Length: 178
Image (cartoon, rainbow, N blue to C red; front, top):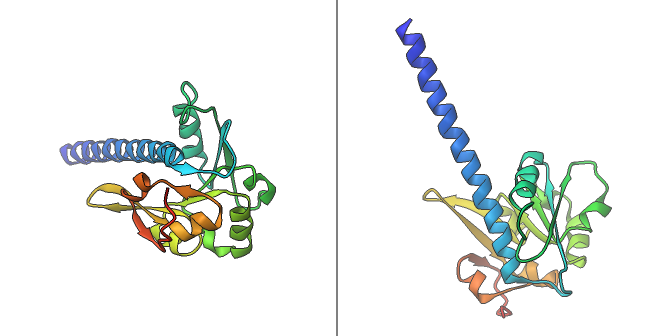
């Protein structure tokens, strides 16, 4: 009986710790998304940001909740949840398209079209920055970091400030940071 209670207590503690980590990961990534908008320049002025979250409704809800009472880089925010099979036209409405647990590089034609529409493509996999995404997250020493593919950014007519590039691992640098 004591073993069962001990196992239940350990399981509960593990569940609580895992929940705190998940909340903290979501909050950190939401903050990163906002910070990216401060240091990325789009070709046209932005009146309000549209961020699309691919295959993660929970994160989309968290992001919407976090920014429902205050502005996202001094602009209103609209969050759209996207799923496999949704119309690609929805993706063209995004300023940022964030792939969570998906592989954006699996559709090169779509990536090319998104770049032509100045969509900032971010992935939870840093390797995706080598394959078409502009920014990829990775975990190192219990801290979230990111890699930026500067060539992919510039191919989408997006420019990253040198301030952002200084905090990133930059691949395919172009020398065009402003």
